[in-house]
Picture 1 (cartoon, rainbow, N blue to C red):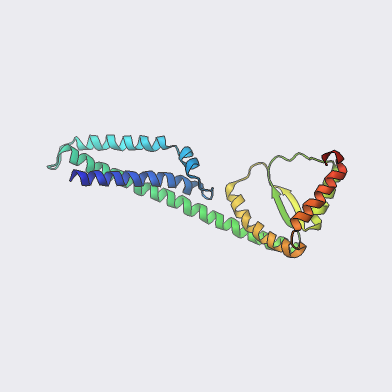
Picture 2 (tube, rainbow, N blue to C red):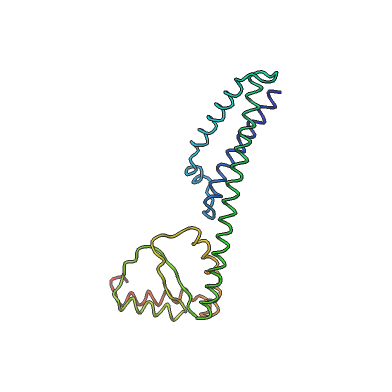
Length: 210
C-alpha cells in the first residue's frame, strides 16, 4: 500500500513540476519556448518552497487523531490530495493565461492583416523598426534613401523603444502578406536590388566606406 501511495505522490509531484514550468510558457505566450531559459526564469525555488509547505501542512494534519490509519498512511494520502488540488489550480491558471494570450494574439493578427490589405491598396508597405533613432546620415542622404524605399513601395516607421513579443509575433502576418505583394510588384530579388541601390548611395556620400 505504501509503495502505491509513494508512486501516486511522486507522479503528482512530477506533474506539478511539469505544469509549473509549462505554466511559465503559457503565461508568457507567444514568447518562443526555450527549456533552459524557462528553467532559469520560472524561479523553481518557489516550487520547492511550495513542496515544503504542503509537506508541513500534511504533517500537521496527519498528527491529528482520526480514522484507524497510521501516521505514514495519513501523511501520504493527505499530501497527495493537497498537491493534486494545487495541480488543478495551476492547470487552471496556465490554461486561462494561454487562452487569453492566444485570443489577444489572434486579434492583433487580424488587425495587421487588415493593415496589410489597406497598405497594399495604397501601395505603401510599412517597414517597422524599434529603438531610439539616431540619424546615421545627413538630411539629404536620408531623404534619398527614403526615396529608394518609396520606389519599391515601402515607407519606414519607428515604433518606439519598447518592442513587445506579442506585437512582433502578430506582425509576422503583415510581413507575410506584404512580402507576397512586394514580390509581385517589384519582381524577384527585389530586396537585393533595393539594398544595392541604398549601398551605392551610401558609397557616393561616404567613399571611404568602399
